[in-house]
Length: 171
Image (cartoon, rainbow, N blue to C red; front, side, top):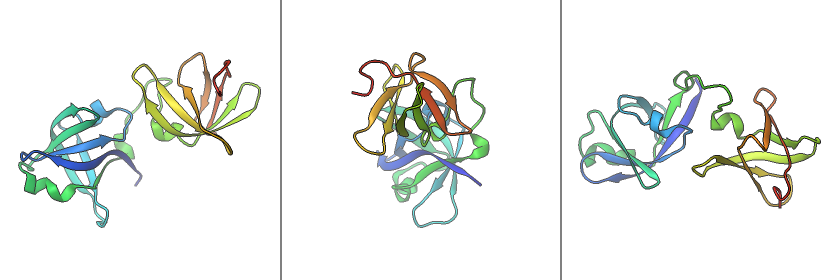
């Protein structure tokens, strides 16, 4: 079974069983919705722990989550450093022209003229639109905004993204 990271537990929060989670997902509001099931993978454990979200709220750059039957600090303290994941079946369908991060990261980026720019190595959420970190074989990374004027074609099957090079984009 394939598993996908959705959040890194970084600490506990208070004494009521909340955990602080750094999101590692494209859709944190949906992933961390009350009632959703997540699987916690601990570094030295082979079997994941199934957890059901009973509370969720955004706090700065984190999400504070509580889980069913985990009502105090002693229930969740052992989960620090764990990774929350979902199975491939839990991913769900996306709208047209929407992609999961794992589909975009690793794609080769080329210009309309056929010039290789690099490979998408990270995705930054800026609010208005995502910005892709495109790392060339040599040199500094480029930051490519995911907007219609620049990104012309995304071919997930062949891991290839075609962009239009606008003036100053790669400088």
